[in-house]
Each structure stands twice: as structure tokens, then as C-alpha cells.
Length: 127
Length: 127
Image (cartoon, rainbow over all chains, first blue to last red; front, side, top):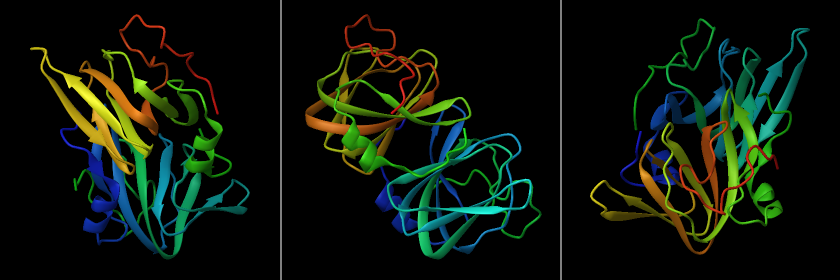
């Protein structure tokens, strides 16, 4: 979807106060660029049909990955760093203080994936 | 494609010295995240089958868009700003000094689109 004006990420971040409620900023064909403010522990989940890209803008994000054996590895992201969680990989974002990230994935992906959780956000809300 | 380590954009930019030669940093399903260093005027072109996202990391990028009537509008991007050029829209990046941008689009997209140009870069080169 063609953009008429530049989308300023710092400005968009300043407008987003809700935690764990991704908002759509732009679309590239059927992919969406979302922004999310995060704080605390999210729920363990996986996206069975898609990879998910995180680009950290503010704060610190500890991405926990749990393998089939149940072993957990943690990858810490700082601003300006990106990370792709592979399709069907169980993961949980943990944010010690507060963080803002860009998320890129196909349109229609639910933030909580396969998890049954109150943290499930309304999809396709634009900012 | 799952990422093993965080990908630091500033570090990646420092490793890229060639102009107009996008390098792949990551993949999200069949989409690629590329980084490109730019200087001067690129060639007018369009991508007939895909949108193209630009996120500016360094410098200034003047994105020129030419409509069907031949009228040109220019959108200036600064670091931290993103812009999506719509499918089949004729465009030309112009960079007064030097700039670095992230580009996101499906795997296989050629930088010069439909243009016959010496600026056509080898595709699918990773950094």
C-alpha cells in the first residue's frame, strides 16, 4: 500500500501507550508493519504458519525461545537490532522495564499465536 | 528464517561500502530485509508486482514519484522514517550526500525493477 507521507517511528511510538497491543503502521503487499509497546512477561506461544520479525526501537527485549526438549535460550535485543523468530518456534518476549518494537509479519497474524490468553489483542488496528 | 543472533543495523551499515548494492540481512518467510548504501541519483523504475518498503537509517533520501501525467512529487525521508512505494509506481531515490536504508520486499526483487540500467545489482547477496 503506497504511503503518502513518511511514517516517523519515534512519533508513532510516542502515540502508543497500551502494552501488548500492536498497531499497524504500513503494509507491504499482504505484510504488515506494526508497532508495539511492551512491558513485563508476554505469554509463551508460537505462530504455526509464519516467521515474525522484531526490530527494537526503545528499551530492552529478552526474547526467550523454548526448544522441543523444553530448554530455554534467551536473546537480548537492544535498539537498532532485529531478530526473526522462525515459524512454529515457541517464544516469549520478556521486557524488564519497557520497550517499543516494530513487528513485521503477514496480515492477519494474532499476537498470541496458538496460546489461549487474555493478552490476545484486537487485530488490524491502525495507528 | 530463524535468526540465531541479533542483527545490529549500525554494525551492518558500517560493513557496507558499495553504493546501490542491496545486501540481505534476514528473511521473514519469502520476504527479505535488505540494507543499501546510497549516493547520488538512482534510475527511474517501477516494480510491477510488488510494493517496496524503505526505512531510513542514515542520511537523507529524497524519494521521487512520477505519476501517469509525468508530474513528480518528492518525499524526503530522514533517519527513523519509513515509506512504502506502491506496486507499479514509478520512483527514483535521490540522495544528496550519502544515506543508508533498510529495504523490505519479496525475495527475488531486482533493485532496478523494469529499468535497463548498469545500476542493476546482483540479487540475493547476504551481508
